[in-house]
Length: 457
Image 1 (cartoon, rainbow, N blue to C red):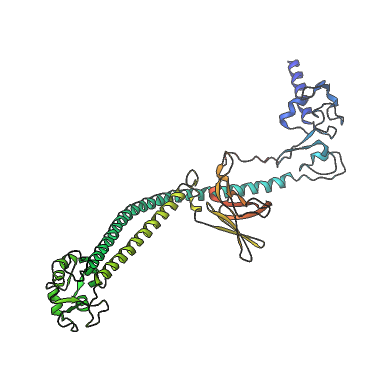
Image 2: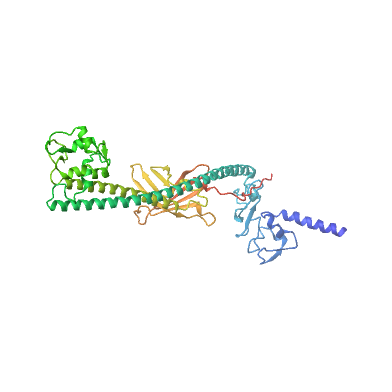
């Protein structure tokens, strides 16, 4: 029993003495239990224990002098209770400058160091707490933006389907307009052949019914009315007299208007006989009859109209295809695993730095404009270039305008967590190479373990 007490006493004394060794952390105290000898931590040498911290360097690794400045490779451990512990080079021990906030490095110098660890710890904890609050709020906003991104993605997918359907419909209409244009060209050729054959009347079987119908249809609404008959048709034997309403209705088969099908079987037959009525000149002047090439003019107008309609159809089809291509390109862009960055598309953010205004348009381009209004491209969207753990932490914009020293301008955009989405800073660390700090909630990442700070008094 007496032996056990003696052994524990010796062990405790050794433990207490090891705690008195300056400049070591708790994880290294096992190497400094007081014994007759001390083994250098690198195993290179054994020295008497009383030579530890004797201000003379015996071990090559400096482990025998953790609390002095004797060893050039030595390190002094600042415990810094209440703040963050850290190591300093042993050359700074007792050099008259306070390096450790607990003043432990200046235990034998003329410097009068105050223990500032608690105040530093308080400020650090307040800062970290503020950062954590920002992170929590940023993550909350990020979740909202993720939900909005998913909805926006679905909307764009639906928009793409609508554009694809519109393109299919326009393709059908385009083919129909091409067919009509081809038919108008063919009928014009028939009219030219009929005129070349000397048949200047309307009795020729090659005369086009639709051309005459379109000639009479002044407002091009697909039907001939009483007013249009009165304006374009005259009596053979009384050219100057305008037809009465009853006469015009009679020519329209008793109706006030007729379409092309009805025209073919009624008024067209009367016109082709040529014994009672004929068509006036296109300006409608009384007494001036339509010249012999009026069927050709009608055919020309039909070709012109179908050409215009075809051009409009082609333009509409091209516009839809361009919109569809642009949307497909946008949907092919990587907007994050949950489309959280999709809301940045089509947005631009500005920041004025001295005489320049910088504009970042995510997934598009970066520009710089001076006070004179001259704008320079600092790069177009290239790719994500973050770390393997977080590839969405950095953007690269490449192939901007050429730099006067050669090469093209480029911009790296670093994304940081924040409760607002804004461009925070712009730097040019090297010629024509720019770095931007861009803050946004979607850059916030969950933290698994907060950096430790001693809270002990």
